[in-house]
Length: 399
Image 1: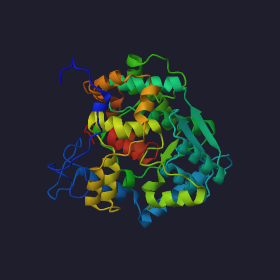
Image 2: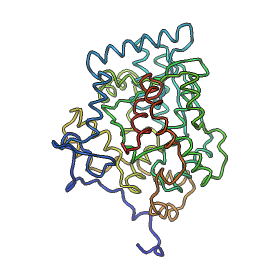
Image 3: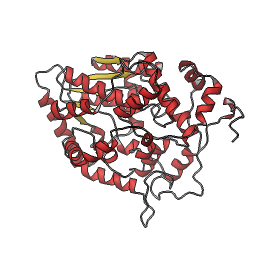
């Protein structure tokens, strides 16, 4: 392409993923372009085998898993005895976190709902959080970042040319959960993640940590980070080793259906669906439905559709068909994004076509995590860090 010819924004279209001609896992829909993928003699990929290993370890959907979950609930109750709250639950207004909050209450736990507001919430998500917490009688702890500061961080990642545009939200939420747990002397953080419905995204497609955020923002940002709750390595080690705050994921043990959960929430709380996985936040929606497919050719629906096919929730051919259809794109979300970040059509079009970068081009904690791999294995077994963190972030391979 001739760099002297200006790129028009209306010429940039969201690509439709075509798997024809590619080697595809015979069980899920991961193809040969997925980072770190390997196929055995039966055509089954290593990611399917990793999920099988997790199912066996956690007893997912089996009697052993249910028993482990019940024991976990009792441990949380015991640790939180005589305290106002015995656990904190991160909430976003989405299906998984909303149902997780209900499940915690139904099991007799006394959760504090915790929300990180990156100021890009959809109205539906905000109302969902209000409806569910009010109906369940659960207190809500919210950390709201300064909107100008938040936008400056997002813009920094845009200029950096990396795929993790919404990565700072994940890190900030983790830090806010730890802060809330520490403030109320709570030992357990409960997360609504299911590897059976969401999978575990390959490291080569998404990586983020506190140093990564700080490095990119120092280089490309204009405002100081004052209200953004960054999770530094020292903070991380303090929370998990000194404070001994555990992170647990009940959906890793029990049977969980996102579709059934959605129907239950709609009937029980007048909860509203927002159109797709993680689309309850407008930045996340823009990142997944537009930025990643257009800029990097990466459609994150691959993870959840592969997980659904792998677990038999939908047929493999149906998953491939759904993946070949365009992602749901909220009307006028591109215009909203450009207006909020004060970007002209021409500047954004140029950024979309700029050279691609990755976390490997910037300073991160990745090498430190790799060196501390034995420690993090022990911490993962003790539920002090998620097992998915150990699998992805401490491995030298792109898994």
